[in-house]
Image (tube, rainbow, N blue to C red; front, side, top):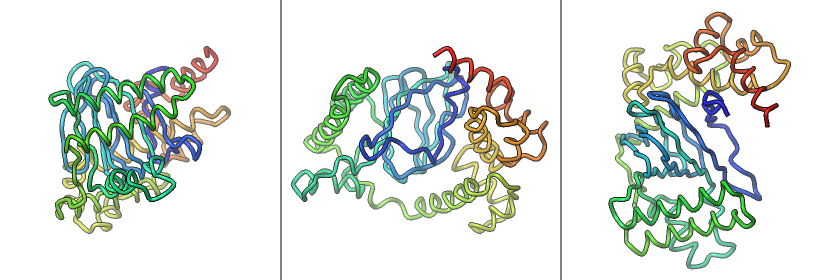
Length: 301
């Protein structure tokens, strides 16, 4: 698939279903590109970096993730990522509902492993590297899950679940599970304010959004809002709005018969020339070029 077609990580995406409560994804990005725009979801997530480096944000923590390292994101954590360095990056992502690990009865597994993880009292470290034995073990499990999901061999669903149980067991045994149930009060306050602004953008991206509207949500002055938003996301509010709108446009462009001018209006642009300019900046191609490449790739498969 063309690189531009991998750029849509939708916060509203449904990851799996009741029978298969996890989603698996492979992505590749060029130097400096937004890997993940600032967002959050109820599910937990593992990012496993395969090539290059990625600058990651989880809540208010920033760190560089290199090839062979991983990130764990608790459900509800706000997170974002950018390609770091001059070679871009690629990664595997596993998004899963922690309820898939719940026991049918309140047994020792539920009491000692699953509930503490769901309550963030005993969860995985955020940045996982091979510096320590426990990190090497987690990375080996992640690589095994990735290979199983890629091959889709019979029973791979059980392999994912089994590896997650073993990862929790290994970490509990080594005493390396993390307690993030009592986070810094000031950080929590900032994160909740950021979530409020992002949720408003996601719900109203198809309409004109003024800085004054966003600032009133917190409340802050417009200048304070811009500084706050950029300090938390490394994007200005308008950069984030445009990025979110373009990702919605990407999904609509995959639907045959939709006029580009109608799509522009649907995602909040009343000026088609401006929409094309913003789209080209984000996707390195025009909307019509993107659509052509997309349908060519479908026909090739």
